[in-house]
Length: 401
Image (cartoon, rainbow, N blue to C red; front, side, top):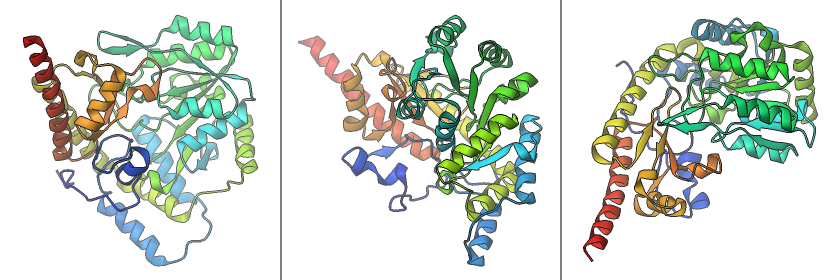
């Protein structure tokens, strides 16, 4: 490999949410964090060199996205997803969660129903409720270790609740589904039939495993482009969330105008020069780095899969098709939800995302971020294995009494 993804970088004391906020969020600082979708890898030197040049320039006034910026973004969409995007369709925001909130403010009113598919990225529910909308859940169906959409329930919820907008998570966080062309086509047709706006969060689009392909929602059927907002960003792909840059694609002019008016109302007028330059550089030079990273993540996934099957069969991997998150079914441990969380935090000393964060029926799951050096992943798994071993030993001792 050209790039060293095994290198462990000390991140404590660097204003890192992932590594530094344990005392505030967990009341302790001894946890090994594999929770939030934040990778522990450095950017490639080609990008760092461009960033250093920008910093050494020494002037940090207001930003403006120029021709080179748009060329890099549009080329990435075209080369990676066969998606032709016009420059005028793009609007920059500080991030995808911010962009989702603006979409709700632009296209819904308090009391409107907004549909999601839990278990799903937990800010979706928070944004819906904080904007005064009604949360409608059409839960994904978990069967035989895999998640699917219940399309009958999906359409029934849309009609019975008069749903105004649907937030699609594609690829899906946390269950790792990469939706097929047929699934997206069916979603789009139902939403089109009932005049539901699709707000598609595609921040994990660059991460699919071999054998799976991400389909950008409006490419599935040209008519879908007229009723959708596509949220993209380099932040997951290159781990630059702290630079706060996202590209929101809205092909429909009327929707785009409303969206930009909502941005104006909250006083946001553009990204910083450093954010714009870093995004441009990532999309211009970062392709080879990303390709090697995806190979490394596939090996991390293989390591996780084998570790669980050979040493902790009580925990089942829900096989991901995309993202760098792994959704673990821990029901085989036969612990209640609270005890499962206690096992991970107090016994194993690891910080994962508890499944209960993603929806009311997911307390027996844990979400682990595998975008870290393999030694870090191995250490976390060994700590969990040790905690599980104590549970086994206690149960064995109880059986002998």
